[in-house]
Every structure is written in structure tokens, then in C-alpha cells.
Length: 192
Ligand code: SF4
Image (cartoon, rainbow, N blue to C red; front, side, top):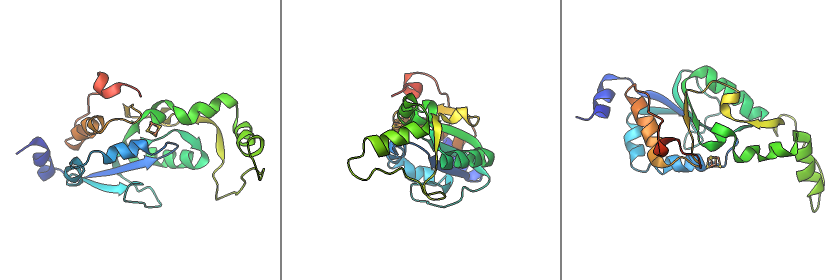
């Protein structure tokens, strides 16, 4: 009997979540590249929140492990991330956008949110020049896009754009048996 099977017999299932902030969803696509290992993973976890196949509106309490993709770019991202941190034991910064803010942070070079919106919706618009404004519907941009650890403490950093399925598995698998993954070496912490 392998270690994972033994653990399943002795431990309750892990409450598992994934969250999508300001990212392209490529990290979640890479998660789906786990292919048949997802079936094995499903025997060891309860997926309690995720944009992939479990689109609940409210992030639940008592989550054991959460993968957070993307930088923190708007007020919705910020609110969700604070809730995730409060309700999650192990928060994993998932992919380069979460770890460094990466591509979403390119807009930081332009200055604050007002300048970015002006450039995108007024100066570069071919037709209707109008700033988006729909309080309560379109979340306000933050002045700067931030990496996850600039907002809340992070337990594990998993870089990669996106992290490979092998890296994702090597990070999650030890957690299923109560161990911390070893995030060392090129195969685990190379960016890009
Ligand atoms: S790290 Fe790369 S793949 Fe992941 S969300 Fe950012 S741009 Fe997309």
C-alpha cells in the first residue's frame, strides 16, 4: 500500500481550494494538465472552492490548502484574498503572477489606475471614448498591482509561468500526507 493510500485511510479528506485573481488562467490550465493524477487527487481532497468545476460564490471557512493564481489588481481581488488568508491554513502563491505580480504589474509602469484607464479607454479608443464606471459591478482598479505576499502572508511560493503539472504535483502531493514540499532546485523554483 503506498503512502498516499495509507494516509487516506487514516486522515480525513483535505479541504482544497483554488482561487483566480489577476492572471490569465494559464496556471489553472496547467493544473488541469495533471490529467489522470486529478482522479487520484480527488480521492484525497474535497474541492470546496475553485473556478474549475466548483464555481461557488462565497469562499468557505476551514480550508486546508489553497492555490492562489494571479496578482492583486482590483478591489475584488483584494477582498477575496483577505478572506482566503483568514480562512485557509496553507496558502500557496501559485505561478509568477502571484509570486511577483509579473505581467499584470506591467501597468504599474504607467503610474496609477487613473492614468491606465485614461490611456486604455480614452486615448487609445477608436470609437466610444468613455471611462468604465459601474459601482458594485465593475471592481475599481488598485493603483498598483501587487504580488500576493505583499498583501497577506504566504506559506509556499510556487513560481512558473505557468508552473508545470509536475511541479504542481510535487508541491501538492506531500501536503496530502501532512508534509511540506521541498521548494528547491530548478525543477521547483525556476521562474518563467
Ligand atoms: S503566471 Fe503566467 S500562466 Fe500563470 S496567470 Fe500569470 S501569465 Fe498566466
